[in-house]
Length: 145
Image (cartoon, rainbow, N blue to C red; front, side):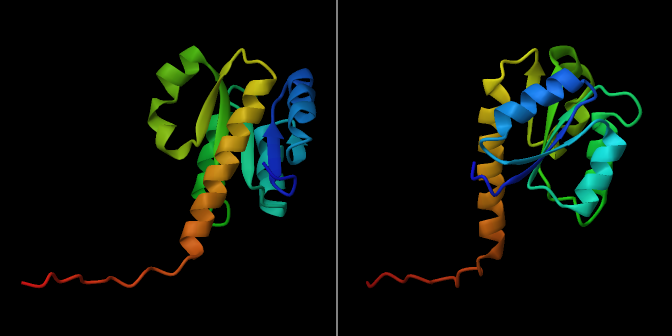
C-alpha cells in the first residue's frame, strides 16, 4: 500500500487504536477516530481511501458508521473493513456483507490488518482506475468463408 493512501482507523479502545496505528503507519497516512461520530466527521472533512473500523463501539457503532458512510454520495465509494468477533460476523453482519470490503476477525495479530488493508487498498485503486478508463469500442470480427 503506497504511503500516499489515506487510512481512517476507528476504535473506542485506545490500546487497540494505537497498536493498529503503529502497524499501519509505515504503509499509509493514518488518521484515527475514537468513535463512529468522530470518524464520520473526519471522513467528510478529509475523504479517506480506506476506513478500518471496530464493529462494536458505544454511541455510533461500526455498523451505523457503515450505513452513514454508504448513504452519502461523497463517501459512498470508500471501502470499509470491519473488525468484529466471529459471532458478530456470522450473526449480525450477514445483511451488510455487500457493503463491507472485508472483515477482520477478533482477536487478530498485528500483521492481519496490514495485509487486509493493503489488499483492500489495491482493489479500491483498481476499481477507480477502471472507472476512469473510457469504454472500449466494440469490435466485430467476421470470419471469411
